[in-house]
Length: 110
Image (cartoon, rainbow, N blue to C red; front, side):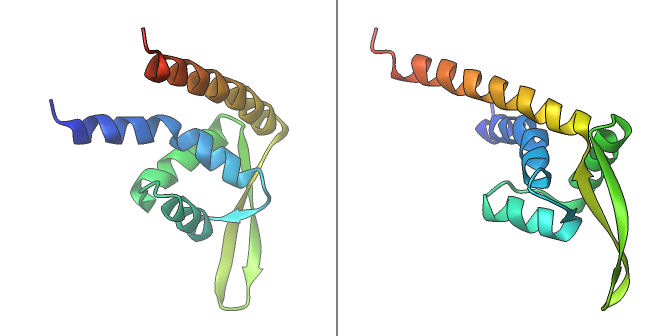
């Protein structure tokens, strides 16, 4: 078994949650989103992120708007919808439950 594959799968499993969380703070441009994820050591590339954003948009969790840029063409900024906010709240509860369960197993001295 290659441990690297397991690490990649763990990151993929929480990427959607992290993306929704970053976008929940306000309008987000894709390059800013990528930069924030990379700062958090969530290695992500545009080829992974764009399909995820499209899936979230098609699922009604995100919407975008075009904003004129002084340095080039208009930019697409993503925001959460009401459904996206609700989904993020549900995911936050699940994340907390997973953290608690995992910590219980890891720290159990039985």
